Every structure is written in structure tokens, then in C-alpha cells.
Length: 468
Image (cartoon, rainbow, N blue to C red; front, side, top):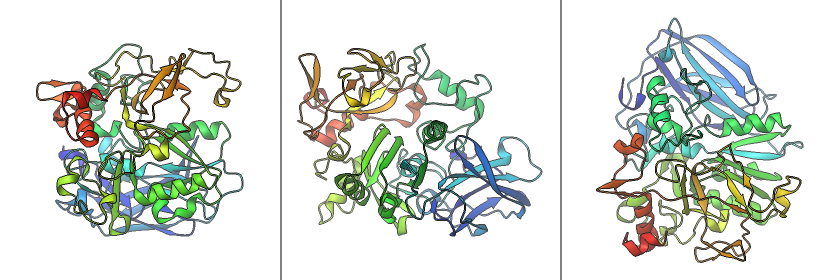
């Protein structure tokens, strides 16, 4: 099997962009080892609605450049689709299937989003898909932001598993969630390792992608009668009008990578009376820059001080490292209220592996808990493991039995803590690791705990690590 599952399916492809308006033309770039293949476009929500299909598309194989992960595939246009005016805003899955082929290699998925040309009168919110996070974790072509790359291209396929996964054959109730949702502790994530091995899925597809979070949220929202408009991360920079007139913006799942202009747009939206609901962890943790008209995303992470060309110059505020870094001076909790730097992991690795996965309620009289019958000390989400994987927090102290922010970490003055749950940053040293064994091969010191101390305080001395 090729490295990072690149070119494993017989036919693969990607949309030229990931976000469109009705009436615009989508160009698909594909490479196929089959003489012909089909393409099917399905709007995915509470139900799946197939709206377009083309058969007998001529297939042509194309070489994959060595730098495809950073500079894109540069494959020619294979076929195009003009989006009908009547197609609603939504997430559209594109299934490419090689003619005459069977098995897992026969098909692959791509996606695009249809935006609304103007706010829909009955839309309750705009859902912003975390497409930046998909791109950051995607190792198609040989590298990602998690294996040493500092530039990653949107102009390439996503590895299998990010957009679509069936239930595992050995356990139909488990479909590859990265955090343990079992009552049996699984600190080494043996269930995830088995699932990925049986289904030939790459490591990081459990950390990002439509299948993991937005899919579930959309299915619930539509079932509950909520109408959503859709956009992707980069629309906040290149099409900021997506929020014009919207009552609410939604971040769901793992909305980790944000540009300066994205934050500007959302801050302006909120300050102008808009609402932002964050059902995401590790939110807005890394600053990124878009290049090549949005086709490339840049993030140097922990290497930014030494390697990012904006370091030390007039544009140092755009440094592509964690937003909490003093080198940027704009911690994410000024926008979100919380930070992963004061949160961490829950029910993953040695990060609270036996935790309840629930929130302990401290302020049951708050309007957010109206009509829930919750009481002080109740566990919200017990049995559903709603606190899992990566979560955000703030520094706080207990006063008269209630959590109170200290504000020592730039937490906004008006933040109120309604409920809490334990989490911790994972430590990796040359002799010890709290990371799940499934990730050991791709994780080296320093760990998140030590790296956070370096980024925030200058070094990972014992005193600085203890501050986190």
C-alpha cells in the first residue's frame, strides 16, 4: 500500500475549491487507473440525497508530484459541474467509483460546500466547517502539519476515512472515534488501533474530517428542525459576507486552525451583536496564513521562531504558531473565552483515561440550563462521554464552592464557568510518554505539556511545566 494511502484507491480526485455559490462551476481534478469511472454528488444531512450523477467519465492516470502535499497535485480538470440554482446550502459528498472494480480500492470521496448567496430567512445559524483542520492532518502526498510539513495544499485528495467511513465489521457501534467512549478504560486505544487496521484507515483520520464531528452535528440539527447555512473556514477571510445578517455562527468538533483575518471577521461579527456557539475543542489554537489565493495553508508551529519568515519583522503578529504565544500578542481566549493551553486531553492516552466524560454542574440556575432540572454537582453527559479528546479551559480557583476565573491567562473579565471536567496536557520526554501507543511512532519529545511551557513561558523547566 503506498505511503500515506496516496493513490491507493483506483480513482481519486478533489474539487478545485471547497466552497461555491449556486450557479458557479465546480471543476474536478482526478487521476484514475481505470479507463472509465462514475461520479455521484450527494447532499448529506439527516438523510442522504443524491442530486447528480455522471457515468462513463474517461479516466486518465497522472503522476503525483513529490511535493503534492505542499504545492498540490496540479492534475488537469477531468470533469465539471455547474451548481443548479435550486441546490440548497449544504455539505456535498462526491463519490468517485472506478467502473468494473470492487472492494475498498474501487471508490474514493471528495467534497464541496454550497454557500447561500444571501442569508436564508429561515436559517438558524451558519455552520463553518473546519476544513483547515482537515487539511492540517491530511497526509495525502507524503506529509502533513503533523509529520514535519510547514505548508499544506488544499489542491489534493483527502486520505480515506476523513469524509466517509462505514461502521467497523467487528463492532457496528463503533466507527473510529479517537477518544474512548467505552465504559472500559482503553488508555492505549486498542479499539481504535484495531478499527484502523481492519479497515485500512490512516492514523490521523480519527482526528479530523467531516465524518467525525460535523456529520453527527448536522444529522442531529436537521432532525431537530434546525436549518443551517454552510461555509468553510477560509470563507471567513475570502467571503466574509457569509456572516452578514446571520443570527448565529457555529464551530463544531475540532476547529483548530485560524488566520488573522478569520478572527477579525468573527470578532467583528460578535461585537456587532452576532452570536457564536462553540461546540469544538482545541478551538483557534494555531494561527495560519493562506497563500496562493487560498490554495495553500502555512503553519510553522513550534518552529516558527526559528523558521517562519515573518519572525522579527513588521508582520510578526502573523507568526504561524500558537495564538497564545507572547510573540503574537493575541491569545485565542480573547475571542473564544477559553484556551487549549489551559485544557488538554480527556479519555485519550494517559489524559484522564478513566474520567466520567461528563461536566460537573456548578451554576444550575444559569439560563443555559433552563428546564433541564439539573442541580449543583450533577453530571451533565454522564454515559455519553461528551468531554473527550481535546478540550479547552482557563485558570480558575474555587470560591465558596464555585469556580471563578483568575484572569491570569487573558480570560475575559465577563467569563462565567457553568460546569467543569478534568483534562490534562500530555507529557512526552525522552524516557516517558503519556501519548497512546497508537501514536507513539509519530510523536517525539517535547510533548504538548512541555511544548506549551516553551511556547508560553520560554522553556520547559519544572516550574513552568507545573504552571500548566
